[in-house]
Length: 167
Image (cartoon, rainbow, N blue to C red; front, top):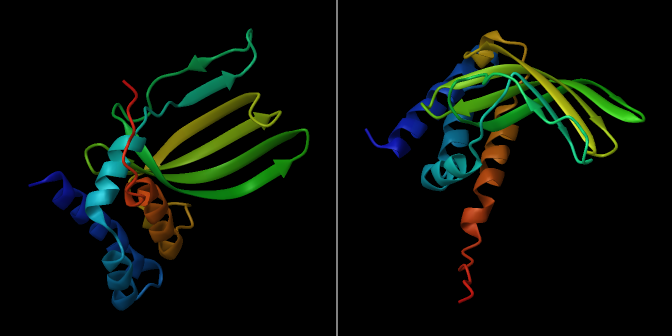
């Protein structure tokens, strides 16, 4: 099975779970028709990253840059984030739920707590794996927004700009 077919099958399974939370089959079919799987696969491979259970990053020279253990033992691409509680003041603190697409075309729902001080001067993130089934998790997944997020991932592949190399 090709990777494009695997991606299409994984997303179809993900979207079909929408019937459990009130979406109709017709709506789901319309959502799935709007996905360019070839461009999305390119984008997913390009955006894949190692996800850590805890991460601390700072821009200052003596700030703590730390990574804990890998959360998934494989690279993943963030597809959707549902920001729940947040506080904006001298620091931005937020609790959110995330949906990740794993390299093996599985999904992971993750709870994340993050603190961002000084507009990215210092960032900490703590993540906990909550399962693979979004319909049985705390994430409030809007499938229409997810389709928009997937299309946004593909934007660089639709620009058709030829790279210019300097010799």
